[in-house]
Length: 119
Image (cartoon, rainbow, N blue to C red; front, side):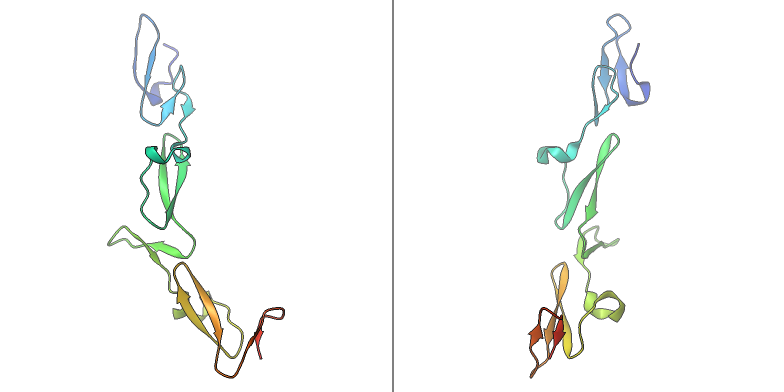
């Protein structure tokens, strides 16, 4: 048989027909199926995206989210907890949002978007 045996369930010795494992296709089972191209072939949790791998796929949390090992969910990162994870100008406060954060100028100041400052 000419099948790629590591990706093959069985090979018919008479016809040489290869029955591919899930995630593989082609006459010799050497072509990876990109499950991420067809939403019916993968099941990712909210706030994650499909990443194709050889013979399968994985779901990766979107930017601004982390995988909670206790719940296996992608949960929002609160960037405002740690001053090293957000960059807000002076005279502003960090406000956590879903998957990101905002910098709001404190009372009496307005945002100058060109200079990215609160004045």
